Image (cartoon, rainbow, N blue to C red):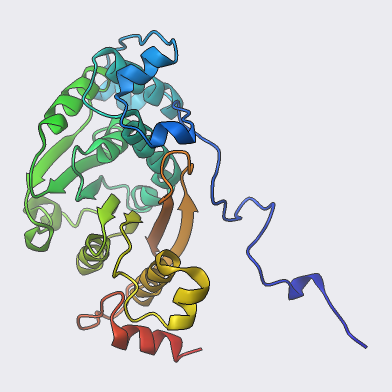
Length: 313
């Protein structure tokens, strides 16, 4: 007699709050169609095409009053995006939506360390480009709670423009730019001295740069990390052929990365942003749970590392 139970279904959770949704609904103020992510349309042009009149918004709050009377995140994001559109900020609507959806889906888990330590958290936006994603973390929290450091080899002109425009709405925002190659960058001395909790974010760091971001976070014992990879060519080296064949290169690479983080004491999860923004919409989250002994040069996607991982089953 055959006995089959519902628990025999080992597929991903369905219709459950924690189920993996490959294309979730939009949470932020910008709602895009798939057509819009294929073209480079400036934010203010998007408003014009949709028949929306962007309203310039400023909030006359000091750092002190903001800390005691925090506007809602939804209110702040709406005011920020309206203001950027009204000022004709040099940012595409796709990039603005991407940053906002990434922020809304990762902020609570990343900033958990502030609740635990009651210390200011430094968010490092690695390979950050114009830095909008990192700016949102600092704009939607008091300056004594979050500071953002954007790191990239070259500071684009759009960084200072976006920063200044958002400061007109959120004058408490604490954001700086560090011009440096990732492999040469170190935690800022004042943050290391104070043992400040650090969080790592990175959106669409190309190819192996995502792996370097994760390695940097492990090296400096980041309390949490969130990366949205892209350009997967060559990133699944060392993953068993069967996994690459069955799941594809992108999942194979991200599974390898998830094991790498787990080996270093992180609780690992995945989430997504709406696929209308980008088809490469998967976010890998690593939340520090316990201190693990430092391992010598164990990197994601290395043959020896992958062999060890899959031989323990």
